[in-house]
Length: 283
Image (tube, rainbow, N blue to C red; front, side, top):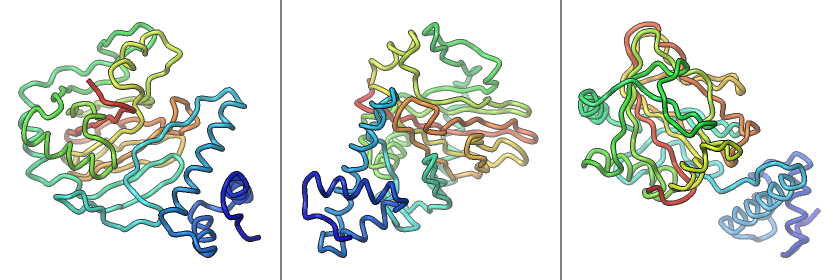
């Protein structure tokens, strides 16, 4: 069946193709075969599917999806140009949206972050949504600290690289958090978004809206253990120095399958830097 020319009929046609099992890339290719320019075809498919998902969410009492950072185009290159570095795509999962990246940081950058953070780390706290307070919690047994956004030249350079990678404004990112996990330390599976139904979430949502993506960067390579795990997806990402794992969540709901954790370190120690991206400018 040929695609309609434009308007609601075209949107319905795109949605029908998706319901019949057509992946977005095949729908884009069908539109290109009908004479649509590639970029316009991609925009049409994304717009139609987003509108459909929003309507489906409202009908079923689910949170409406929002735009999220995206480091890769459909059928994109294996290396992403971030302006000052070419980052390798090592693995690419659509649902949950997880991208494993190689060489996001240089060894010297990893070492410098560890050195700068080491003097300021203390026992990590966990934000309790029900109460709206941060406390030391048994689920999280790491030590950590936060850099302010653009606190120094190293942070500015890394933040600009992440913004280019994720196609997301620098100002929509929280400051880098550096964590150290010693032998046996872990972070049990959890979600990074803030549950809007809980009283304590309102305070943090005022500062830039919902978290929509996370980027975990590995600053060293522990000898054993310490993987980033995604229990719902059945995958784990090895903590290799300079590499990173990106994942996004278009709504604060378990349907995003972004439950994740830091497995216990079995030998050595693990250092990571985490960057959380928000909907709006973070202040």
